[in-house]
Image 1 (tube, rainbow, N blue to C red):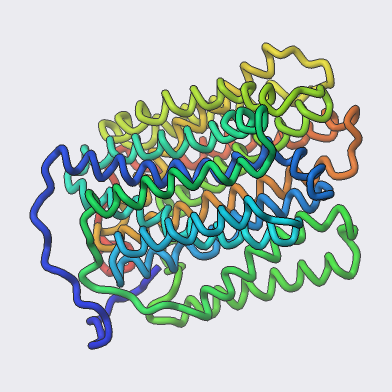
Image 2 (cartoon, rainbow, N blue to C red; image 1 turned 90 degrees about the vertical axis):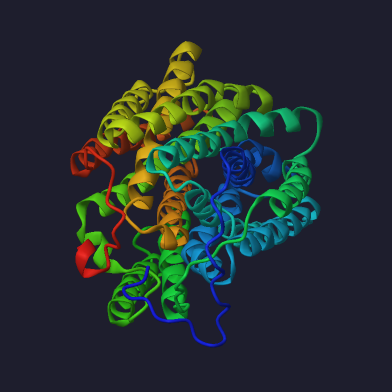
Length: 483
């Protein structure tokens, strides 16, 4: 985030003149193209989950290695989102968007051919680089194409619906692919989607960039990446090395030092990667905290569900994926509904609903056993999906409307970073709970995870209290008028 803006230097590409307003048909076409890319990013975040047992068998990888295969993607994605949004505001959103598609597609091919776990983890990290150029940029393109606040809220609701659908549908899609193919098909599926998105973006998406741009904050970017990597790394490796071992203690110290360094650097830069003053505002900090909590709950649910159903109950990947259909349906149906509610009355009511459904879903499984009723499982997944669907639109809308449209790339990057951080933490925490558990003991070992899912729902009640009943201001919070 930036504290101030500056006039572009001679080497900076000049901002183009404001384009004419797009027709309604063109605006919704742009939304559809952006939704296609977001479907890809969300799908790849979770499609691998249902294939983890097959990947483990194929590459000889244990639970820790499988966690890194998932979190190698989400960590890089979370680390680079803000810088990618800044690059898009500077060099052109469509240009960066198309570059991200190309990188993502190339990395998907490497994943499909990976001969070892190390190569797969590295390729997944490269996928994260490409995905970081898609998530905030797609939202920035949508925001700039939809100047009317009510129409924008509806568009964000649809965008959140597609993103939620992709996250929830990942296990179903993965299970279907694994039913007839091997785990490499989980990455081949990206290729035709990438090709379609590249073609459609070239034809329909207009180029745009911020009138005033920011310098890249390299020290802040390095420190942010280090903080996230150390925190998630300690959570993944802690069960193996021991929470009080010298390695774990060094990880704690490194994460604390990197965090202090990040705060120190960012508070002294004129144009920081992340303007820490924004977190003084309860509305903004609540939106970020809510994004983390929602994605911790979702990713913990998906990983625990995959391993429980396949290892403990010996379900096939397809059956385990189909079990999440109630979650996918709930997320898909409720996200646009939540967007309309947010546009009419503000974020508070959908956030309260999200908190209630997430809490109920987690509580349904706090007594999970190897023989828990399938109906109870499906009901819990449905409740969690409904909560997830209600949460995304008000969280995203609050963050986006808290900044001017010219900084939409950064606004999208903040909430996207929080989401991916939540995804990485959810995977790491879930893996830490069940590491070393045998198939019969996995259900009991996962019970604290379901308590945490319910706790994330409770947290949304507090986030709702900090939200405003009407649309957030579009003044720049870093400016004197916006503070």
